[in-house]
Length: 475
Image: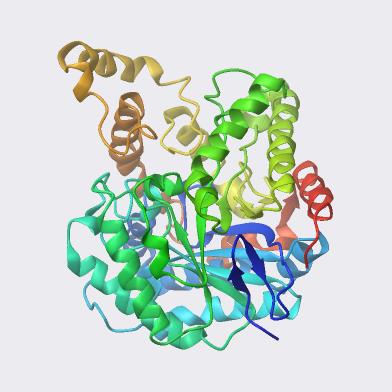
C-alpha cells in the first residue's frame, strides 16, 4: 500500500489517482475537552482533582479505562459503515512528555494511539495525527489545556523546541505506516506576531522530513486555522504539504445572528466566509483540507419543545456546507465523532452511569455557561453585561478588541476569561467529588458509559454525511 501524497490541489494515492478524505475528528479522547465529556475547565485540572479524591492509582485506572472504551474496533466498524474513510485523531502532548520531565518520551502514550490507528486500518480507515495541545498552549482556548488565555507557546522558544523534539519521535514511530494519511503538527495556532508561526512551521517541516520523507503534512492557518494572509511565499519550501482551514459557520451555533433557513443570502454569506479562508491557497494552486467544521445541536433537556425545530435548521446548515465542499471536491473532517450529546455523530446515552451520575452537575454547567463552545448565556448574561458595559464606557473603542480578534471580540473575551476560566475553576473539585469512595469496579462502570454499546447515534447527522460521502469520487 502506498502513502497518500499531495499533488497540486489534490490528495492522490500511489497511482496518482485522486483520493478525497471524508471523515470526522476523534476529539475528547486523547485530548479531553469540557463540552465533549462534561467536565469543567481543562483536562490537566480534572486529572489532578480526581487524583486528589480517589488517589493517583485509581485516577490513572479510570482514565485508562476511559481511553479504552471511548474508541474500540466496534467504533471503527460503525464509522466505516457510514461510508467515511478518515479519522483525525486529536492528542495531547502530555501523553508523551511530562512538563516536569521534558524531552523524555513516555512510550505509554503509544498504547491507545497505536491501538486505534490499527483498528481503523483494519477496516480501511485512514488516520491523520493532530497535535491538539502543545506545551504552554499554542492558542488562547481551553482545548490547548494550558488553563490561561495567553498562548505562551509563542512567547517561549523552549516550548517550541519541545514540540520539534516530540514530532521527531512521533515521525520515527509512524514513518512506515501507510494507513496514516499524514501529520497535522499543530492545531489552531494563535500567533499574535503572525511570523513566529511560519518560522516554527519551517522548523517542524525540516525535523519531520529528517526522519520521515513520505507522510503528507497538513498545516493549519493562523488564528484558529482561518488566516493565511501572512504566509506569503512560505509554501515554496514545503513539499507534499496541504493547508488546513476550520470552517465553522456562525449559523450553526446558538448565538447565530438569525435563524438559518438556507436563503440565497445566507448561503452566499456562508460561501464567502469559506472562500476567504482558502483564498491564499487558491491563488497559488495549493491543496486545501477542511480539518474541522460542523454545527452543534439542541438537546431536549435544555431546549425542550424547540429541540427538533432548532436541529432541522442546523441540519440545513450542514447540508449547505456540504454542497459547497462537494463542488470543490474538498477533503473534510467534521467535528465530532463522539461526545455526551452536543455535537457528536455518536453520543453517550442519558441512561448511562456517567450521565445519570452527572445529570444535575451538567445542568449547573449549562446554567452557568462555563463551556466556551457554542455556549448559551441566557441565564448569566445579566451578570456579565455590567462588566462589558464598563469596558465599553472606559476603554477607547480602538483598544477594546485584542488579538485573536476578530474571532474573539471584546464581549467574547470577557465571557471566556470570566466564565470559562474563572468560574469553571470553582467547579473542578465538585466534578471530582462525584467519584469519591468508588472502587475500581465502579470506576470501570462509569468509564464504560463511553463505549459504543452505551451510546446512541445521531441518525439525522449521520445520514447526511453518508449521503454526501457518495456524491464525490474517491476511495
